[in-house]
Length: 426
Ligand SMILES: Nc1nc2c(ncn2[C@@H]2O[C@H](COP(=O)(O)OP(=O)(O)OP(=O)(O)O)[C@@H](O)[C@H]2O)c(=O)[nH]1
Ligand SMILES: [Mg+2]
Image (tube, rainbow, N blue to C red; front, side):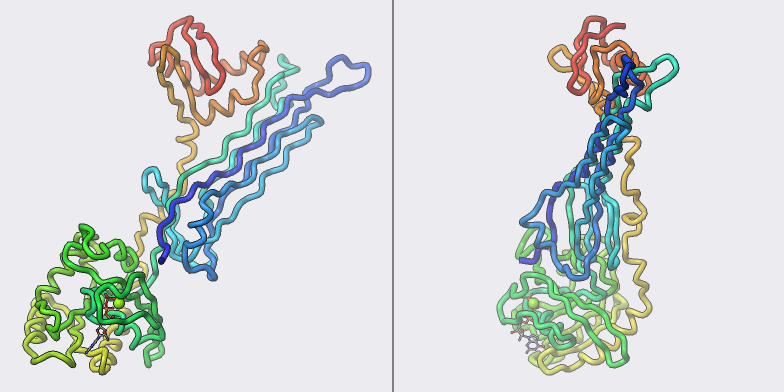
């Protein structure tokens, strides 16, 4: 089975916690603070690899984590940073956030590298919090959590030309005639179950990639036959070859076929339906007469489309068709088809999300959570007065107090700061 859509879970490394430590010197009762900073958590990158063509490996391994940063230690010793993780994917892989389908990265080039999940920053050690009035801070900053996400990896075959049409009209045969590809060909419907790619080398010295996909039938957009999900493989082609059987051997009408397939394309994507099409009137060698071709030619004229009478069995018309394809491709810029909005989209909007604070009221308690809050309370000794002052000041800065008041907190209520419960005092 052609693997082209997988869901995985990935988490960047957490930052190490800052250390609470003090110098121990002979004859000195309490030395100054010397807790080192935590190390940064490892980032997660995605990288295209020319040797990988499918997403099949992700069927077996679905969980990816980068290394955590190490905690800081005494003697001003910083924690080691976690190692970054590089996940290799084929060219043409799009990475989406599974929770909202937002495109995080679109890897269309060889050896492209994109940072997708950022490791957490290391927490600051207590030496950073010493001031003239606070000489022995008994708190340090917790490491920030690494970003984690469920991701969708979607591989879209990057072809220049896509073959579309009903089953058995000869799509795979055409690909086999014009390229070195050897797709399965047979006289029953749905012979092709997964996309085939072939490189067409014209005698004019240029080349392009052609994709053959499973046949479509009426209602494919509603799931009939093999459905239309395979259309994603030709979404980014620049040109469609709409292959129609003009022999009438299967008892269908070629003009109706033309409209039916276009309707299904439109159901999938309006953009795809508008793509440049060339009509390929195939199986001309076994057509009883020229009637079907003529009717189709009339429609082509009305629509301003080019039409070619061909036979992939005898080779009739194939040379002319490829010549036309090659010259049309030259007029269609590659860039125009890529969804630029995907590339321009920022990979993350970290800061807004990091500062997000949520307050939830449940069973008479107020639950406060958010990335910055977690970082704040992780490594703090709440029993210690100075630490508590520090926390109070930070809570105010983060807007926690306002949020709690909005939620109706009163003196004496229980407030849970991530995992630390305290009694609220106005
Ligand atoms: N006589 C004749 N037979 C053809 C021609 N093109 C294809 N065929 C035959 O038609 C049958 C179907 O061809 P395929 O190339 O497998 O058709 P397809 O469109 O890829 O079909 P699916 O993969 O099922 O969608 C095969 O038996 C081919 O040998 C043609 O131009 N003339
Ligand atoms: Mg086929």
